Image (cartoon, rainbow, N blue to C red; front, side):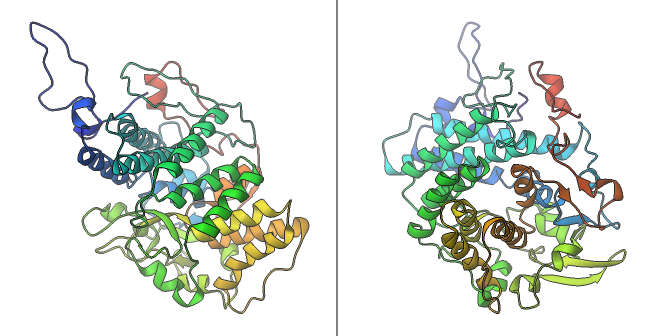
Length: 456
């Protein structure tokens, strides 16, 4: 495994003996670096900051989750970012795939050190370690969904390497998908039990961890546990859905929230700690690069009275286009990247309730749909039609946040893209080898035990 280490808190070096045992002058062993609650807090802040990496939630994760599906496409007039993904022609040397892999394992290394720290026994230490478990679960969830076939395809298939302790000499094999999901769920169980404090949406809370658990169960097609976890959040979390009257204001606010309005967890950026021109909003805004455009067939699904349509604008860019205005803060305080929202959890509850209680499924679906469009009286469908209504609502509600690609993969559905996309990449069947990212060539070169994904 190739790691790139940032900061002394994630640097662990073995000491050599000559006549004296020496410690490196520019780094500390982990047992010396993390000796107090304050040390762990600094390390935890570093772990949260690493989620803002351009190839994690800074930009690549949310962009690819829509671009590789049927939500956004790359304008013909573009800055040449993510072109390979628009065309489904990603090479093994692609920089974004390498960046996602490397930054993901950097973040895992940081939280591993926190989890392994000997500081324990206090409420704060338990809180910090609980958040570290949640971060590790989140990153592994992204890695296994991007670099491996879905759990619903083959739980025993190749996942990604599980690394929980630092060893600079290790050259790990890929664990199975099932093993990675087991680690994720174990981490989330520990996070839920350890976290007792709630600050704001830029840090994992108890119910943010439970919300992620609901999503993980959904991706396993474990509907009973997905429903249980989702209802725990809905019933006990104290979070409220955004209404039509404050929806635009909600998206225009670039700061974390402490009032439990909609956002369970987001990756924070501000006027100082941000990615500048590489921030997520810049690739959407027509005052920035403006490369990513709303798919024309998605735009037509929003009724004129749907408040979500107010964040989309028709215009001209190499021809007629629909511009995305969900991320408008690109000058000073950049927009946070929303990772877990309550509307997603309601829609998970809806899908997970289908088999056991269709009335509940409709109620959870309509809780979202009627809030976004006050003129809509609600869905009355059942059976297979109700499932399609739920999935359509997921596409509309979570658009431009990076969810659709993974939904289509877990359901093993063909990706049918509109004529906005290159002709050769409009119909992406399942199975299709390139509906996952390549293991980076740099990793393949460094690790003889690594196995490349089929098709690369």
